[in-house]
Image 1: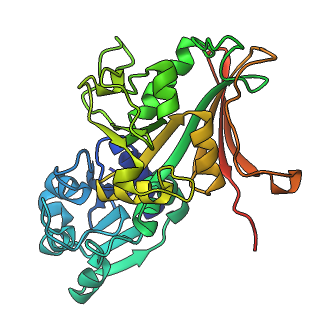
Image 2 (image 1 turned 135 degrees about the vertical axis):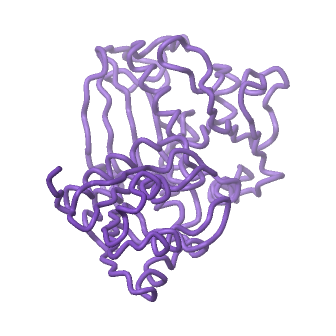
Image 3 (image 1 turned 45 degrees about the horizontal axis):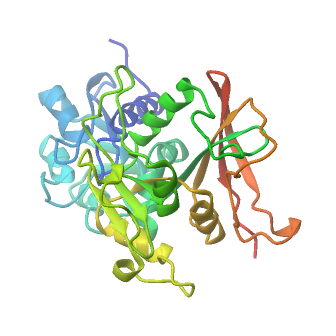
Length: 353
């Protein structure tokens, strides 16, 4: 087999890492490709689930003795601590790997330090190859670890004129079945789904993730979080049905903002403490406005149906914008047709100054 350039091996490692999305939290997604001394691929792996073998360990097991003198190409700095598994830095040293190429340093102070340990053992270490691509594939975990609260995605569904329901309150279904299936795939990549008590009272959603083929419950369910300042969630609400874990977050438990509502930064800090690295904000429009006004939304995913209503509730309420100069500017990153609908993905632009 012909030798493989290190750059190509990193592209492969990034693709491997993506296979772990939705199953590794609170750990990151990581991919690894091992090249022997001649540059031939002799092992590859990815971190598949929390508590399972890390990407480097899987790749080393495949490579065996052919790892000696070779190069490990890995999307995240090898861990340097013993948790549910041993340190990958030590495993690479013991396997006789001569060179390690890393895309992104590990921002977690508990696990970082692998590069220094490898260098101290005489292993050549390079950091930064295809860093932007590796960051994008691991953005939720990296963002969460760097700042101490989850990466928040606001998802909404609306008509072309921005309505989330008709004038009589009916909203099933604004978007198509294809869009709803897509939403369940999105839920499967996060650790928590957040909704306000208003949405629970109005729509009684389950907020579960379901399998795309038959509609059955997915094995892994995100934590269901109801933001309920005064504890109004009914005892028989479907979010309490036992299909997934549920946290009804009240102001008394989390802390209150000056208006007596749940303090949102405190809520996110607590979610991070509970192992949530990515959260999907699903409703309703008032809660979404509060998150946006506070600058707590990292990504927006909107499903826009080719329908017009002309009246009815809007998908977003007060987001702290009083004049056009204060509008929340967005960077469109993707527009894809899903069935008859459009899925628009955007990132809020940070204000200068």
